[in-house]
Image (tube, rainbow, N blue to C red):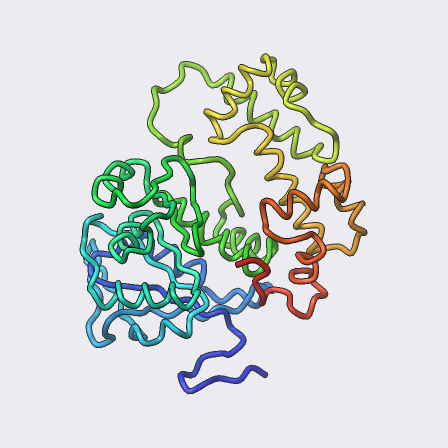
Length: 341
């Protein structure tokens, strides 16, 4: 039986703080609440303890549209958090209260993971946490972030990015991507997939936000249909030694034309997309089965355990064996211990 502490909180739950102050976006608050504030333990999802943190708890935090958020913890709770989330802003240059900025600086100094959704990057920049670091925001706000905070290295086309345990995300739906990625990072791919299924969204999207920047509408959907069919074929044949030339031929294009159209449609290259799908397949097999490593590598399309191990190290900062130990269904630590910080 789980024991509580003086605050009535479950000690085994992963503690998440939603930092709130006037001007935060209701959509981002809703995303954070949907991912981290909904009890899905009956579906074997991890237990989360989401707290709404503000400088004071007596006054509701106003949001656009007549909505308000009632905090249940003050900033003094932040040292207890495993993860701190900063929503975006309705007005992206809204100054955050000085106590909030100070608390965020202290949290980063303690080593707590901090993540900002969309325009929440402006709040982290106000706190000085993005100075000399890479960050991302909505593509329509990239120039504004650069102009107001020139000390920040703004990456223009990522969906989300991490630098020194500080995460930032592009606009709106990319906040969902980042939240699910943070679940995946700390609790495994199956936990993230369970939450994504509940939300009726993809467990992860590949590519960059470049695919969402406004362009002229194409006159035909022929290429889009061909690319979709190629991706579906690739997912069904991941274990085969697929090449860009193979996929291009299936789409009826030259490799160069295929790569250009694929990148424009997905925001990533065909090879990077294939790698992402194979990593996801390997993660799922490591969590759900006890297949030997060479067989996991073969089924995921890596060809060899060595190749799979190299990609796990470069992309996930861990090894397949450590990943299985942390997140497999039979692991005593499954869903509770991050393996990479």
